[in-house]
Amino acid sequence: MFLASELPAGTGVGFKPEHFRDIVAARQPLVFFEVHAENYMGAGGPPHAQLGKLCEDYALSLHGVGLSIGSMGPLDREHLARLRALCERYRPESFSEHLAWSSHGEVYYNDLLPLPYTEETLARVAGHIDEVQTELGRRMLLENPSTYVRFAESTIPEVEFLREVSGRTGCGLLLDVNNVFVQAKNHGTDALGYLENFPLDRVGEIHLGGHDEQTDDAGAPLLIDAHGTRVADPVWALYQQVIRRTGPVATLIEWDNDVPDWPTLRAEAEAAQAILERASRASAA
Amino acid sequence: MFGPIQNTFALALLDPQRPVPGALVSHTASPPAKRFAVYRNNVVVGLVNALAKRFPAVQRIVGEEFFAAMARVFVIENPPRSPVLMFYGDDFLDFIASFEPAAELPYLADVARLEAARTRAYHAAEAKPLDPAILQSLDKAALGEIRIVPHPSAEIVRSKFPIVTIWAMNAGEIELAPIEDWSGEDALVVRPALEVEVRALPAGGAAFLSALFAGAPLAAAAGTALGESADFDLAANLAGLIGAGAVTKVFLANLQKDEMP
Image 1 (cartoon, rainbow over the protein chains, first blue to last red):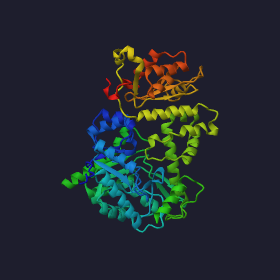
Image 2 (cartoon, chains in turn blue, yellow):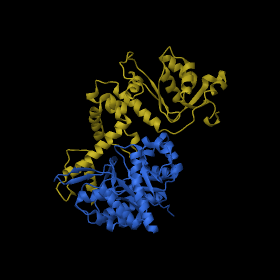
Image 3 (cartoon, each protein chain N blue to C red):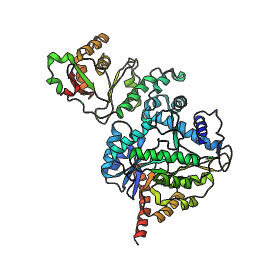
Image 4 (cartoon, each protein chain N blue to C red):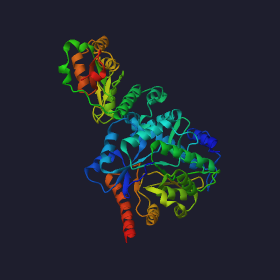
């Protein structure tokens, strides 16, 4: 029997230590915090003291960035053991990771790197997710990526790939709406079409974050998933459309770089909360 | 087959001489050089930033631009072996010591050594420091045979340079000013509660603590310290050690650790 990944259907933010004092000074209008698992893999110290305190009042989403599920090589068993220890220590409501790779051979590259979508990689990713879920004794959520390049060998559309991974492993999905927008712009595809096909019934959490805009070799827009600004207006619009279809879903504001003051970050979460509340009134009506 | 492509992709991330992997495409331009450059940049800048976060005083001393250039060389030669980046750069100090452009700052590697010890202390396991009152209750006749259990966060950093003062000035602990007494300083780094503390040790102190931390009994550790410095003051050093919270237990050599008070 696997534990489910079940966050309460409200809003949360990615926790940054610089906000700790502001957060604990008052009850915040949030239901959960999310942390990057790798930042809590020391034995003790202030990170654990702060996380322990947050867990007294809020649900926790443990979000991994270093498991490298998209590697063709084996998963790092030591890292998986560290994740299991963290899950046992904090009993998070959710554990999630990315459809990406970040390690190869001995080296950790500290970035979410892309993979082609083929029968070969599908089998590999599904196998890795089975291994993670067995080790952690819980279902995980898998996040859709933002990418800057594609692979000539890809044969399966990304949404179908995610649907199939979820179907084979029973894992849920983490829908990053900013990534959907970035992905569509970067590859000249249609974000609405992507969301229309997305298996929304599998979604256990939504991510919203900001992106930067650059240009590629041809001068075409190239959006960077930078998490250093407010959520862009077209991403809010996509989010509203998703929520109209799903009803309230746990929603996270990610702001990892150029971190703003607490009131600014909280205001972003409140904007998401307002959308969730409208959806909940609509479904009650 | 993605395996060989993944390998080519990975190797090209840290080696700008390698071409953009041929398996990559985009709907606009081919090869997608600027697109692949985003990954190269993310990897290197992300790791440089991880080092800057761990070595802020080193960065302050050399400036952001010099630090980034130095860290970039290190990152490419010594990428991390683990996704737990809080401990990335344990060998950055050896790199700094042999980094030619930083040769004018011979103390830089030791400041890095101190900062590396501070991060380890920050993330070390919790343990309750020994109550200083316990010293009064010990049998004076047996004092010389007493051994200690160091706090999990405690480390000694020795230097020929005034690293505690240099670090404190560049960590915003004290005002920047010319250093009048340019002599070596040894540091005790310890986190008895939530704050990491850095203390400059008195004469012979580092030899004394290093011996104690390695398991030597008190009398032998004091002997080692006296051999290094005739000014070594046992009572003051012992009180300083316990007062700093760097000891969690004391025990007599013939007893097991778990029989201790």
